[in-house]
Image 1 (cartoon, rainbow, N blue to C red):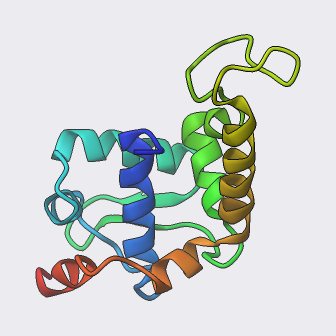
Image 2: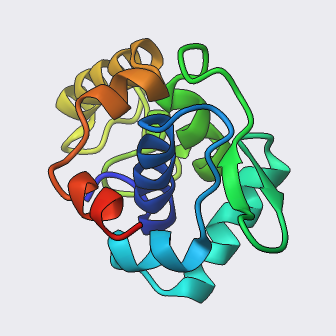
Amino acid sequence: MLFKKSTEYALKVLSIMAKEPTNQYFGTRDLSENIDVSLTYLSKILQRLQHAGFVKSVTGPGGGFCLDFDTKKIKLADVVKTLENDEIFNSCALGMAKCGDNNPCPFHEKWALFREEIKDYMESMSISDAAENFWPAYNKVLSSR
C-alpha cells in the first residue's frame, strides 16, 4: 500500500466516474458497495473531493456525485497532493523527520529514486488515462445500475 486508504478510494471513484459520459451522476451507496468501502467513509472522501473541486453533487432523485473537471487535464498527482499534502512525494520511507541527502536513512538513496519515478508517473497520467486502464471490477459497477 503506497497511498492512504482514502486516496486509494478517491482514485478508484474518480476512475469509475471518468469512464462514463460527462454529467453522469453516481449514488454514494452504489459506489461504496462496488469499491467495497463503507458508505460513511466514502461520503467523507467525496466531500473532500467536492471541496477540492473534483466532483459536484446534486441531492434528490437521480442525484449523487459527478465529475466537475476535464478528466484529461487533471493528473493523478493532483488528487494525491490534494488528499496527502504532497507527503508521498517528499517523505522518508522510514518516517524519519530529518532524513535527507546530508542525513540519509538506510533506504534514502533507493527510496528517493523510487519516489521521483512515482511522482513523474503520477504527474503524467490523467484521470482519463487511469479510467481507460481501469480494474476489472469496474464492470461490476455498470451491471449494478
